[in-house]
Image (cartoon, rainbow, N blue to C red):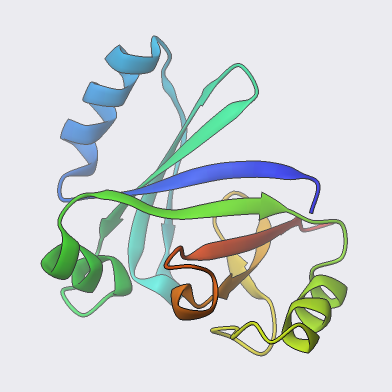
Length: 133
């Protein structure tokens, strides 16, 4: 894993949270996107090398809606950049980690993504990200 790619924060209202984080980080949202496969709307902010992804459920049955119903708004996941997502998935699986998908999926911000189940990662939802070339 190369670096922390971003931190994902689950929010009820993307517009309100976007305004809050723009003020907090003294920057603007540089990209918004609907990720239909995850039933989520996203907004990205960057401060220096650090990125924040705000996530709002676009469907009441989406993973984000379920997360907020159970835990409330807040940090949802930490994403790590990898060079070869399939190789990293195989490595983690061989180490006993539980992956939430068998193949990388197209995610937000032009990335292939895979999630590691929090039960096998110390209670943290981990996302692997690789730039789609």
